[in-house]
Length: 187
Figure (cartoon, rainbow, N blue to C red):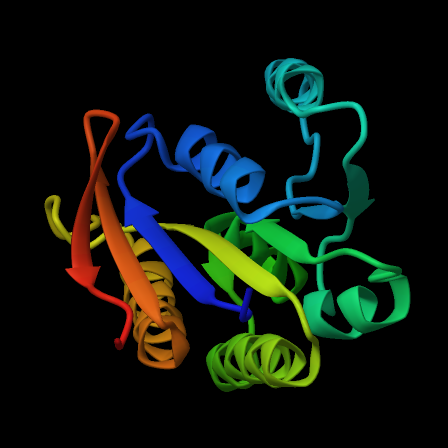
């Protein structure tokens, strides 16, 4: 089976992570699950633990906050499927590096760092003989964020999502647990 690059995009609680796992099981093992979440508080720690328990025990897990493409290249092993969950938290990790008290300290550096991170991931996808399932949130369907940081985050995540969608073979919009094909695979 040839490698395929799939982007899953949707709102919080739309079923992205669950569908990513279903797709991975269909594509075959071994699977490398790349988690980008940071347990900044007790509630997030519980969410991360719940996600860990929901993954099949045979899957390898790589927990990284940045440099995702580089880390995948180093830790891929024999994985034939890679899930990256999720780009939204990866972007948040980059924003956190260059923000203080809810305000960005260096907007050009945030943009440069996020775009470089996505470029590195896309290059990794091109280099690796494995299928990729990338999970991200669509944050542009709601109200305009009230804060400067919120608007910047929305805009830069949208740019990252567009880059990933352009590089993907398939894109699915997740709504209420349903996968709506946006960009079908080329036949």
